[in-house]
Structures are given as structure tokens and as C-alpha cells.
Amino acid sequence: MHAPIPRTQPRLWRALLAALLAALTGCVTVGPDYRTPAVAVPAHWIEAGAAMADGDRDGLRAWWRAFQDPLLDRLVDQTLAHNQDLDIALARLRQARAERAQIASAAMPAVSAGAASQAVRSSQALGSQPGGQARTWHMGFDASWELDLFGGTRRAVEAADAGIQALAENHHALQVSLVAELVSDYAGLRAAQLRLAIARDNIRALGQAERLAEQARRSGLGTLADVTQARAEREMAQAQPPLLEADIARFSHAIGVLAGGFPGDWHAALATPAPALAMPADLPLSVPSDVIRQRPDLRADERRLAAATAQIGVAQAERLPTFRIPLGLGTTASVIRDLFSGASLAWSAALQGSQSLYDAGRARAGVTAAQANADVARRVYERDVRSALRDVEDALTAWTRERQRQAALQQAVADSQQALQQAAQLYARGLSAYLPVLVAQRGLNQARDALTLSQLAQLQAGIGLYKALGAGGADSGLVAQSEPRAAAEAAATQ
Image (tube, rainbow, N blue to C red):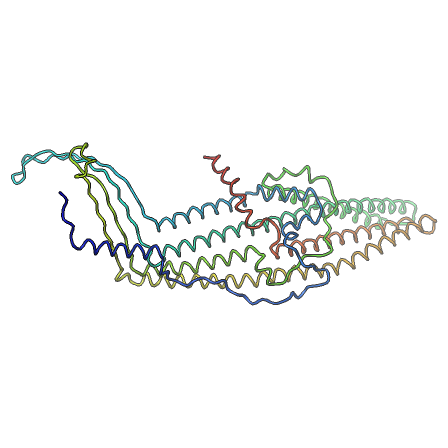
């Protein structure tokens, strides 16, 4: 026979059903709903000259291909595929996704199963209870469901989703930074190789000048001071190649590590001198408002602000009552064969609610802290927007001013070449000594070296502009595409 059902049980079931419906419909979600902040920015750049063109997104995404250098293209592809910092960023992204799954699981019931066997022997020396032995068998399921009536778990999941998106944007921002660093190092290496060739030309010219000074001294047309001066100039010039060779080695080592390998992995491929990178005639440039959409670091800031806003709702939900539905279903019997009989079946169901009455202001302080954290995130976002626009303006200023300086240096090189030709013609006609030819050659080498440095400075400013615009690397979709490779590598290590 079954025990009679208490009259309070239908009322309990109605309360449980009402709580269940409220949890499923999610009618209450405390905390502010997030809205992307609008930041007022200038309509135009200060340094927007005629050399600036409207940039298309495809060109910005693979801007380094405008240099038309196959080796550089290979290095960038290698860096995006094998750089260790990118692998670390992907691992953090996987960690965040797993933690998000843990947070979301709080909204679902937790179910456990168990079985037990117990044997008990009572004491024979008890006067009030006769001794004896008993054995019980138990098997059942237990479930517990904490109802998310006020949306605390939903806000936590919202914050976790925004955090994942911020990490994905951080991965993209790292790609942008690494590509810019690699291209900058490659440009520095090629410029150093060109400067090394110029320095060796200068040493040869100064060596010839020293020999002419020595011949003039022996013939009585010069002095020892002239010879000493010529030798000192040649020795000063000889001190330049070791510095340039060290720069070349340093750039080569940096490129090897950026590409995910060891410092010497690309030494042989980079050792052969190649023409220095030439800056494209036009640089892609969008309006200031586009920079906010293009730069992944700003998008990451915005997502962190969204996560901080959602955490306000999490903190507010902790101040409100909590409700749990514990459920139990099992069988208990003294003989194991009776475990599966209807008489051994037992179950329990309840609705439990609790509300903190006094916590010394802990929950209230948690809400205040979450609100302050969201305010910090908002101000960081606004600050970084301004810094990003400053980066673009600085790069534009450096690029345009260096272009103006470069025009003067190009004219200096042309004049030096003309002076060398004139000195050589006078020497060929016997109207001048050879020393003016060497002096003109030295002046030309110095002008060439200064022009090379100016071209590198303008190139570095252009690279800085691409980086400031958020160009390079892959879009956020490629983060997901690279996940299988990282997952396979992780599985291979287990």
C-alpha cells in the first residue's frame, strides 16, 4: 500500500512549477544592458596629404605584399603560422572557452548516481535495545538545480562571451604587432646591408686618398700631417662596417625567432643582399572613425567593457534570494534482489530558498566594485581611442616630414654624382689631381648613406602607420580556423 499524499503536496508542486517556468522564461535579468559607447572623434586627419589614398580592407589585411618581396611574404606567412606568442594566445583562448562552459553549466541541473551497501551489528550489551545484525542496499539518483531567477548566471555567461571575444581580438592585435615588427626588422636588415656596401665603397675611396697623400709627401708636395689625416679618416671609416654587420646579425636573429624558429634559421636566406624595400607611392588611409572599427586592440577594449558591464548584473544577483530544487530518486532494501521492486522505491522533491539577512555589506560592496570596474573599462577604452588616433597622426607626421627631408637628400646625391663626374672629367684631361675625385667620391658615399637612412626612416613611419590603422595579420575568423591546428598539437602532447 502507498502512503496517503499530504494535502500540502499539490501546493508544493505548483510552487515548483511556477519557479521552473520563471527560470525557463528568464523574465528577470538584473543589471544594466550593455550598449556600445559612442566616442566622438575628428572627421579628418591633420596630416592627410595628396600621397594618401583611401585604403581597401583587402589591401590593409596583407599590406606587406605591396613590397613585392617573395622572401618577405614567406617570412610573414611563417610568423603567422608558427610564432610562439600566437600559440600562447590561442591556448588562452581555449582556456577561456572552457571556463565559459563551466560558468554556463551552473544554469543546468547537476545529476549524480550512487550505490551503497551497509552492514550493521548492534551491541549485545545494551539493555534498552537488543543486539542484532542488519544489512541494507541502496541505489539511486540525486539531482539539484539552482534556478537562475534573476539572471546572475546569464550575466556571467554574457561576461564570459565578451571575454572570449576580447581574447580573440587580442590574438588579432598580436598578429598586427608581429607583422609590423617583422617587416620593420626586414627593412632594417636590407638597409643595413646597403649601408655596409656604401661603407666599403667609402673605405676604398679613403684608402686611395691615403695612398695619394703618401705619394705627395714622398715627392715633396705634401706633408706628414696630410698623410696622418688621410689615415685617420680611413681608420674611422673602417670602424663602421663592424657596427653594420652587428645590426645585420641582430635583425637576422630577431627575424628567426619571430618566425617561430631559432636565431640562425634564416641566416643563409637573409645573408645575400637584396634591394632595400621601397615605400609604395600611396599609403592607404581611412577616416578616424574607421580606425575604431579596424584596430583589434580597440575592439578588445570594447569587449572588456561589455564583460565588465555584465559583471554588474552578476554582483547584483548575489544580493537577491537564491532558489534550489533538490530531487532524489532511489531504492532501498535489505535484500539486494528487492532493490528493483516497487516497494523499495523512494523519492523526494523540494523547493529551497534562502536570502542573506546580514553580510556586513559584502554584497553591496561587490556591486560598487563591479560598477567601478566597468567605469574603469569605459575610461580605458576612451583613452585608448585617443591614443590610437595619436599613433596615426604621429606616423603621418613622421612619414610626410621624412618625405620632405628625403627630397633634399635625393638632390644632394644627384649633386654629389654631378660633382664626381666633373672631377673625373678634369682629372682625365690632366687639369686636376686625383685627390678632388676621391673627395667627391667620399661626399657621394656620405650622401648615399644619409639617403638610405632617410628612406629607412620613412619606411618605418609607413610601417607604423599600417600598424596604427590595425592592418596586418588575419581577421577574427582566422582565429577559429587556426584552432584545429592548436587542438591537434595539444592532443598530440597528451
